[in-house]
Image (cartoon, rainbow, N blue to C red; front, side, top):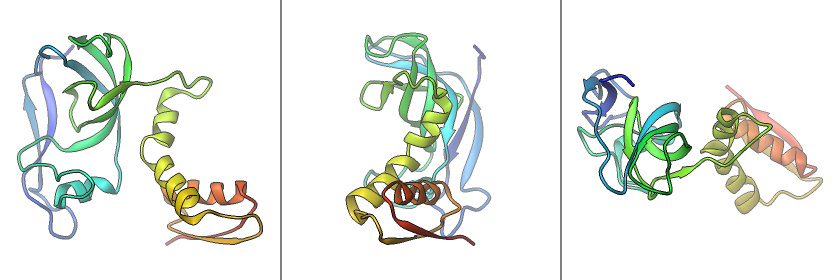
Length: 179
């Protein structure tokens, strides 16, 4: 294990898009877990449209605090644990930060289930944020019915491409819009 942790920290609330100085890239000591926590080495980070929302304002969860590590959905390996539910060597996913190493616990992380034959990183990419977003939008809200026409804006994006597939599975004619 390295002795330094690279961390992206939120320094300013973006106005519009992200500008130089809104985030900083810092090198810091690796924190040690306390009772009920584990230390996780980041394997994969999901970069999602919601990251910008979390930088700007409270939404379904509070905004990232100024000077805190930037928040993200992560897939990582537990390297040290002081919590039974998250043993050393376990592959875990959940809410974490843009950092090589991070402290977590069962309130934000869970052991990644066996996804074979699909590799864990592919399952993470599909099921972490974009898959559930497409599913809720299409199934819970859109409720597609066979024979209907579904128009997907942003069809070339991660969520839109899955939404289009869901529409096809339900027997819909799918029209995708892409810029």
